[in-house]
Amino acid sequence: MTVTSDRFLEGLKRRITIPANQPLMTDQNFLDLATDVIRDKMVPLFLSTNQNYFVTYVDIPMYQGQRKYPIHYRAIGRALRDLKLKASLDNIRTIDMRLIALEDEHLFVQQTLPTGFYFSGDSIMVCPEPNADTYLLRQFFNLQPNKMVTMDKAAKVTSISGDIVNIDVRPTTFQAGVLVDFIQGKAGCSTLAYDVAIGSAGATQLLFASGSVPTDLSVGDYIALAQESPVMQLPDEAQQLLETCVADRVLYAIGDYEGSQALQKDAVAQEKNLLKIIQPRIEGEQTKIINRNGLLRGRGYNYWRVRGGYYF
Image (cartoon, rainbow, N blue to C red; front, top):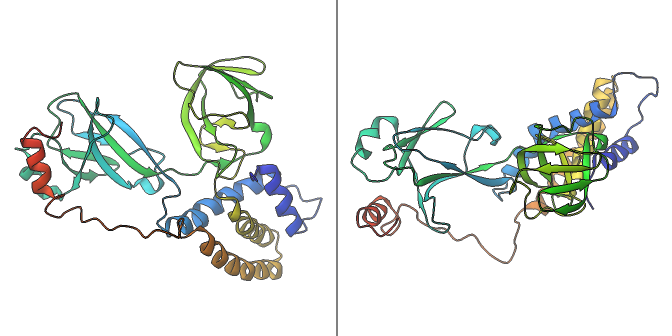
């Protein structure tokens, strides 16, 4: 069952008793605490399993003579999972990009394709620079879960007709030109598409540019402002641990230190149980280890493919 912000708040308030006359903790304050816990505790926990829960990719066009390309701004830790080069007209084949030391940049000058790279701040420097505008830089990265918000700040999809999406209620913030995210309404609530601009907004209807509505968008999914979500973007099994950690922070904030310590003990056991559930994601298969730098996949092989005209 999808963990909406309303369902999460109900579970949180069942765990702890909060004075009714306190003015500081609104529902959005609770959800802000939940977002903090997701980012500083839940995300590292899921990343530690190496099960690619947040991995996605984006293809960035490369231009002749341009060496510097930005890391996607929504990548967790401003880091990449992997980096590959592909031809813009080839939907299948890719070639591995090799991380090199800045001092070794000159060794790649004579290559035909930009197969090496190094980091410079929040940018990727490719080596050598592209000699044509026919390549794409495919960045695999861990997408940051969106900030949790109350249900009234998002809209539920009721029907889809091409580039027109009908919704139940349109939030006042949904105006023409505003960037939104499409959020899956079930199965982990992943982000189907992000930073999509609204073309025009009616009472219960949103129009988007041609091709910008994700093909896998379904009735029951959500639309929210960019980097916001009305649902928890974690497996449903993480709800109990998230509630406990947020409840701990709430009790600590209002001075109930004894209750906070009790919840911390519960969180330790819940974290162990959650790890048993989320890893491995498949029990019947072992990960096949591939030597990417071996004789058939290393620098010499890729160089032969490129120089010999076999690859692109």
